[in-house]
Image 1 (cartoon, one colour):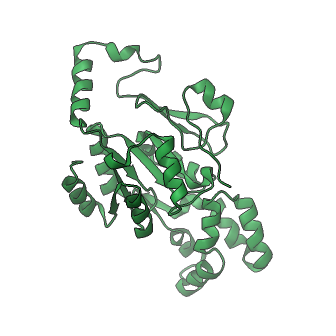
Image 2 (cartoon, one colour):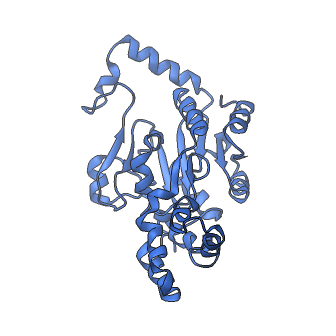
Length: 278
């Protein structure tokens, strides 16, 4: 049974009701992303450029502010929304970045480990909400000789993140400058996402992020798309969805979103131009 996502309205509410990573105020005024993987942690707050943390009174700070606000609103007059996958689209994630070090150049040995021990299906269970403590314990009971390698998946997870896919980050920045609301829907464990959140500042640009590990559903399950659209009150007819996996794109298209299979930043920019986003 999957867990329902909460919508964060105020900082007080954030700390009192607990918050998954799939949270934001329903208006496009301010977004909050948890600083840590637990549900009672601190929060990063993303405020409009130039707006202090005193509140929204600063938004009336003169004609220059007003012209800027009107300009951004006009640029997105069509009410378009952009939804991105994260790993493989904005973040270069691959367990091989870590395990090549651990296998010291033994490429066949590494590939055998990743296809028989720490497999894609095993990792998907953590993406769906299972804890790494449970997941690693289960594997170590089956492969006790590989205990150190199994534990490294979580303990050295940061080394699987090579860095941003800069061309896509540039596109994200351009969309943000045009006033396009930005969302992310990602298969990612809530335990390992803080590694990415700490490293990649652009994750704070999103108006909302839904993680599979927080809601107990993984793409391409139709239920996570339905939950995502309802949680953030997104009209799928106005949204594009970018993912590097075809089944995920096809499911998004089934909900009425314009699905774009990610084939690299240059191709994505061309697809977005044809769709009227750039």
